[in-house]
Image (cartoon, rainbow, N blue to C red):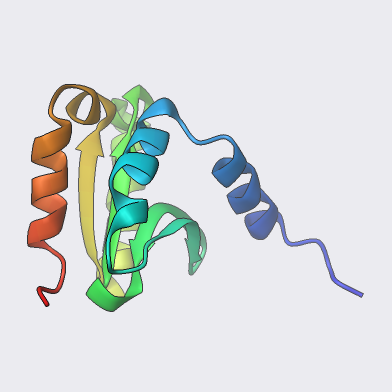
Length: 115
């Protein structure tokens, strides 16, 4: 019998209810890349927006809640924990995804292994 895992349940809910910017990045860019990305991936005690294991890359899209004092402090702790696992964390604002989608995609490509 499976036990209820709140983190897994949260990740599943987040995958089903992606933000407009997450959907745009996923369906219009990440999903079509030759390297696999995962949505709402559990890493340790965190659920990250997007994860590429082969590149050791985490991509986070930040809405306004990330720019409060508490949000920035939580992100700092989270980023440190992910960096301690040897991962690279890229953060983009939702506004960047909306206004400079091509630039965001180009920056992500710079962090992926070249074939």
